[in-house]
Image (cartoon, rainbow, N blue to C red; front, side, top):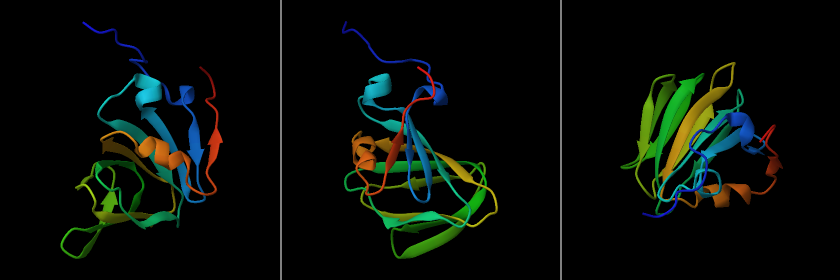
Length: 138
């Protein structure tokens, strides 16, 4: 049996925060944190009136689970479809599909994001203007 490394329990304060002009992102499970091999999980917060606009993730399947706030989610599978999203809703994004998420509320829009396979966590650190804040505590 191979040795398992990485954390089994992760507190948000123990991981770095990626800060963008539209909000924040914390990778709670990724290869450098939990030694994840096939998927990464993070929490995204989008500020009111902001959003991450139309984009896709080539070869990457994605799930969004909304925790708090309200917004509009666009998914372009067979033409663009836009729907309101709020706490408790889940959106599945097949690999390569264009999408965007915009906060239409007056409070932050917060959601859990799951990507498979891994790799998106590396790409997100290289976005222009990204500021990486170190963990609050280890």
